[in-house]
Length: 248
Image 1: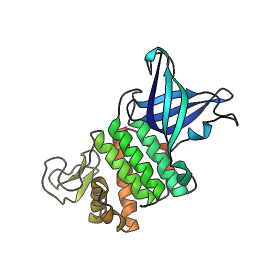
Image 2: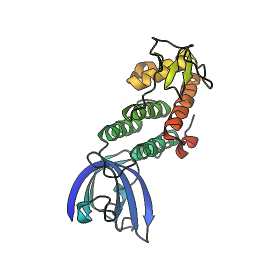
Image 3: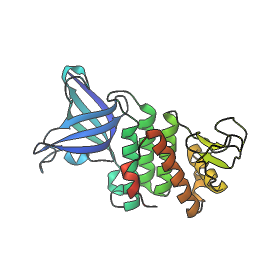
Image 4: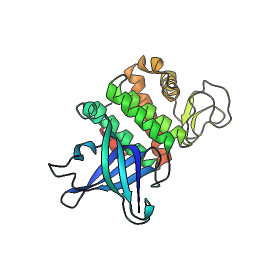
């Protein structure tokens, strides 16, 4: 039996019994962790409100046998708030739906409990902070997070050079199955011809060029979001349930 501490973002919660919850977090050092929080649904709970989705917390866990996945779920025994991102996210529909899609994405990209996923964790913390601050449009923040999550998991799309032969861009066609933009010679059935502005936007979001992204017209943002959703669905092999509720 052992105690360990880690900081993480609460991804979701599930009811357990009459007063408990199962808390799923993406942590800095232990990747995705599911733990039981006893009594947090009681009105007198000292840290129930700290264990809500979007919360960035420093938590202490008690693991039976010192194993996160081998002998049942660990217990979450202590929680301190690092940043309560949910306060400014849940009061705005666009931010809330975008944030929910980010949490679901982070969970989907961390399939194995207890396996470190430091890049995914840092991406999520940064995205939550940016979303809560309102510095950029929620849709742009979401698409930037999705693209970067794909990149750190080995699925970085190309928005300029040909994804198949490497021919320097700009290239006209876009194929989710080929990995992004393709030239005329590498074009495959099912390729689309997006506007150059949409491709420029997605490249800017992937690179962190917020000046270009913020100046993009809404119609190109909508087209870009559709391309990101299609690319994500292809690599996850099924769509995100929360994306259907995102405000376009």
